[in-house]
Length: 196
Image (cartoon, rainbow, N blue to C red; front, side, top):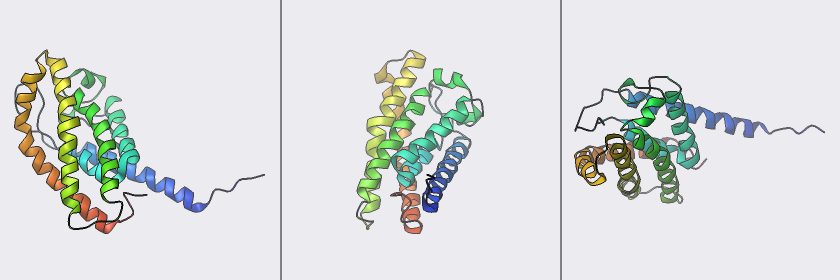
């Protein structure tokens, strides 16, 4: 007996794969934007965190995770898509490795929380809640894991790195605002994207 897969199911999977590929490319493109050297720990200011935020807010937890994993896989395989055009497994031994791990965790948590915030639709307060989601995830996930990665790679203390990391916070607030505005616009244009 032959089982026929409904065409809608095939379209759904094709759309998911397309979304994952597009957002992985977005992360790569933003990672390759000119970085701003800052501090003495070898971690520049980039647009990676902006791309991760947009991905989680727009794709949700699992497709967002797939997009980030694809980006990390491509970079680890040797394509120069990491910040500063870096590539290969050596990046995982450097000071930015903690941030790469944080991207995987952050996109899942942001995705789940974004779905919860928009479960009953959007309102004028939605951007505020999404902004708070991003800031909370940065403080509880991205910064701690990133700091641990830097401390491990440089032999510095967690406290010293955490204090040095404070210089990145104002820029991350701005990137969070931009991510929320972009995501909110996408919600209006494609209201079913996040909850597919």
